[in-house]
Figure 1: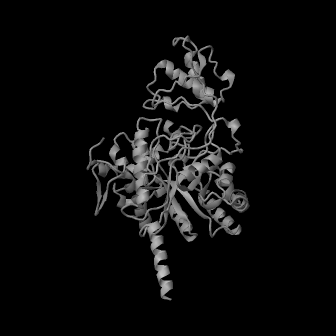
Figure 2: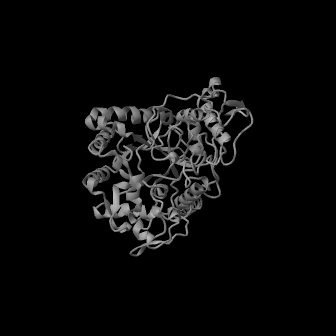
Length: 496
């Protein structure tokens, strides 16, 4: 008996040595969007996730290639249902049954995909949607839950609804004044109660960058975790950054309505690297490193000290996303579209980011403005416009990475993006005699002249294309969600 006790003592000592005292390592979670003209093959993306320690991923739809590649990967999956499907799913339980059968049961049983959550809708109550999804979100949620039960999956697969932070507000200008928007208050209570009763979670998307983008008077430093901004005092609680203040505004809203212990995930949070003066690699590195440090420390917010699941937005850039919210929408990735590293991040213990492996590219050549072509030529402007109509030129905007190019290089960038988007087709570098092909890299830091992924050298499954983030201009809604406590803040700190 004594020998057994000694054995158990040393066993638990070894466990503690390897796990650390009293803290469970949750791993890292991230969003994987698939809106790309030249997507990374799913198997390469899954390896990228694993190489960088991401063991949870959120998909915006049940993309077949992604769902198959995630099978038996050890990565837990939250799979989304696009807003466009809410009406048919709300209208018919049999439609919900079919969706679960095709997009959950199928991948769980055939491929071993570890589906843990179904995200019903994506920010369906944005004010810009004008109540379009108000009547269908809850019924769709109820039918999907019933379908999961019917399929025998409900014990493992839970439901959630990812919401924008504009579903709550504060009239006092402080997090403690948080409550749900009056126009959807009763609906929010019904959804939260349903989620609670079925062991689901509430998912909220928080974007400090959008607070800065939407309001020129927003104190820039307050958007970051490690900052020099003056704090916001809310009774005994001190808020040093907008993320904490925003999240705790939600917690206050939950407490006011009898859901103080409701579990909450952060479905999207991150910082873009291009498409706006405040969207740059330095700011993105600063914000995301601060976010990662909190995750690794297991640090929550003042009202919720326990760290929730936090899905970083996003893994890779997506060059076909809608730019209605802003040009930055295509540049949220911590990696470029091809899985190359944008900036350094410490993933814990000094572990750096690891780039994608096994990526095949088109030929090392670019389409540029011909040295003999004149900048005063009558076809130059129309040629640039045509190129940017069919390719991604968002990096050419004011304050963007390619915003300071001279006129000749500006035209070259547009021509090359079109040339690459067309898979370097011979006739795609022919802008009325204004262009020529070169093997000399025209990139000019920080501006990258891309070479696209060679889709012909990768086996890519068919992919259904759905916007990975609502295309509606959600910027106005962010002001209501995040800057509702800014008036009090502006009394306390300088405006940067």
